[in-house]
Length: 208
Image 1 (cartoon, rainbow, N blue to C red):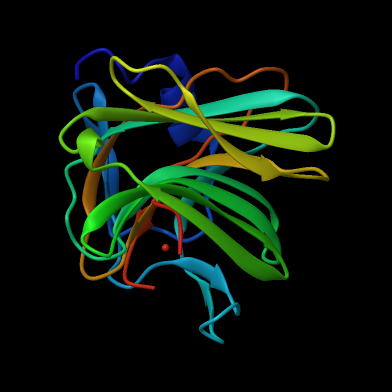
Image 2: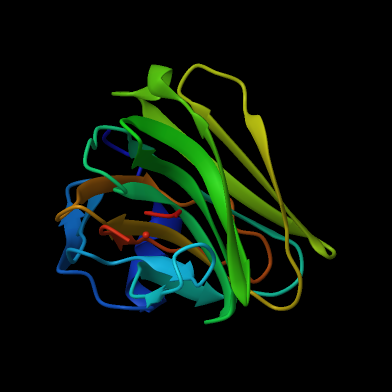
């Protein structure tokens, strides 16, 4: 996917801050490659009783209305591997949205956390091997999340959001190390924010 790592992504990489450093991250031509630390994840308490705060999200401060978008190839097959976007207020308030491999299939979904994490998913096996884009847009007190595979129309993944947030494109490695390509994170408005993460068993990258 040449030409997809535009100025916005390069600026983010140059000026953004990782929530937790990945095992490796760097440009390979026009593709930004991130290798997650095994077991990295973001989740708080619900159902499992544990708190995981080890995701790899590359964040930039932002305020007011904004959109953040990330595109990646859905080519991962390990349990809980994921990629997507990450919006963070603090360790107790954040949203991650993207595609996570779970129960033998890729699942489109989002985790909304306000002290406790809430996860929603929908299987998207037809997206395997395709370029997937996830976009989160904030306007007022709401965050709207949409996602689509190349050649399709965006579909809605509803999720609320409040307060000042930082935006990110994320990845995580659950069952093992996850190597994913995040091709772009464009569409920043005033005070834009985007980030990249890697996942492990337990989180975009994003969900659980």
